Image: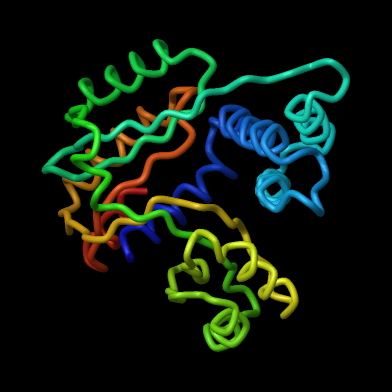
Length: 252
């Protein structure tokens, strides 16, 4: 899952430092609203909301914004939110597979923006099911590497149901079955190990290694998709060798 890991790390860094922080904030707020609507406003009894709030705090979303989002989602104070979840499937440059997760209050707008981003950046919309078979829903926990070794992480999570611990440049990714995410995340907390994010994601079963030129095109396409307020996440099956990763880092 090296390509997946590197892109997940890149996304996390971008969420904190890039000039589109306000757009990132809006998507994190939307996640909180939906989690509160589905499971209520109590963080202790709603682990999905807990993780959404923790992710927002890690990205410096103000506490007042978080509190208002919880109330809107839970319908406290008369406000209410209504979003529809839609998953689009597509192909990027050189046949790279894409799963595009939308959360929207306007399905027509979301569909139009996804189609436009794909067509303008070398991608195409795929028939339902033609891409999804290559992805599995997994729990993905990103752990900072500061002061934490791989052995520390392995020891904390293996008995809790983790499937894999994979190192990357900024730390580690812990992969779990989707239904084990909360248990494994709690095991990390019990061991005193801080985590950056804990989400259920679509992880590719088979990966496609790409060269630097294709990677740049894929990144541009993903950036264009994520520019839409309706697109929450983009998952892909591309893989990057160490050499390609180094070449891309040299671009920065």
